[in-house]
Length: 167
Image (cartoon, rainbow, N blue to C red; front, top):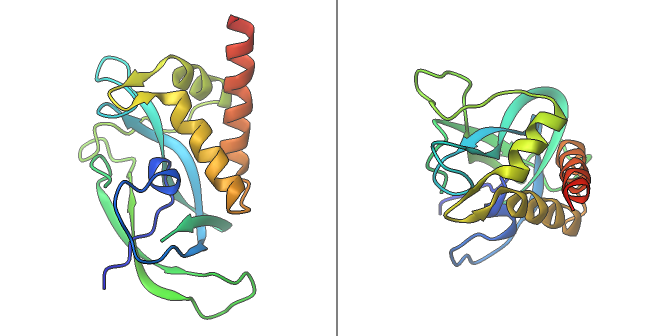
């Protein structure tokens, strides 16, 4: 049986394929960040959108659910469903990560201020729709599983602020 861990945007809110069981939990020592460029779904090569990836962050917890083309690294991680558990529910769950190595990941955009990332998200749109839709769907899906992610929430609030100023 293959184990897929969904922690990114579209997969956590809309898997796009049938599955037998949904398991919500978290991995340790990673955080979700909008550092990966999207030139094929939520942006274009001329104006890439931003999508989430995972980055190592000691002491952090990243909530996930059990197609990523533009992620260049695979990691196998322990997946927990109980906060105080010392034994994972699943060992060796596969996650895809966008590395910051521009030689192998030409779409990596990297860190920027919340305002810079938000402005890029507001403007970007690709074949899968507006980048802001991706962000808002991720925020909603995370809240539905009881996991507020500060980075995602801060970005969503900044995007809403920018949109309200434009109207």
